[in-house]
Length: 240
Image (cartoon, rainbow, N blue to C red; front, side):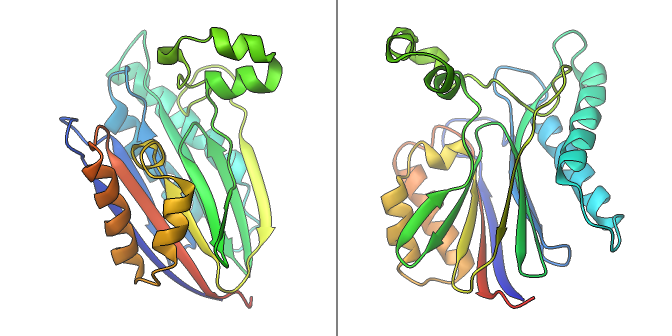
């Protein structure tokens, strides 16, 4: 299996602090992003704690079959404990989406509204579903329920890493295919750059770092109202 990867983060043009973190660990096959929850204190600390916990866990897993749900729950516990120190009474939180690339296979875990995509042969597929009030209402409610949502509440998270209640983790398993490109993005990009534009940038066949730079620059040109973080993984050869 042969992968090429890159990661890039930018504070944007509005925020005073970058609360995003990324995972780019080629030796572990571990890639992803985390976005500290806005509206709570300690977002940067939450994202950094989650990323640090995941790296430590996968460095220690040896040859055992990795359990991504258990890893995410370990990150949740670590962030929750940190929140008791950083923000007693309110807690802290972060989104997390990460993938483990091993033996021609991708294992993916996800909580929050940071996203994972796969691009291949001019098409794009979103591998995650945002855990937001808007999506939960669409999934469980009626069209009228969605129309009644106030715009300010539509993007409110329904799940995050660091929450004290039992955490539900979404997972995806899929074989890798040569020529695919996997993206892990925070919402500072996904709210400003369309799927079609991601496909267009991928079609330019740029090196991974240049691809991400153009993507983030596009988000910055449109206001850069949030931190913007991206990780790209190109599958040059999926042979295990």
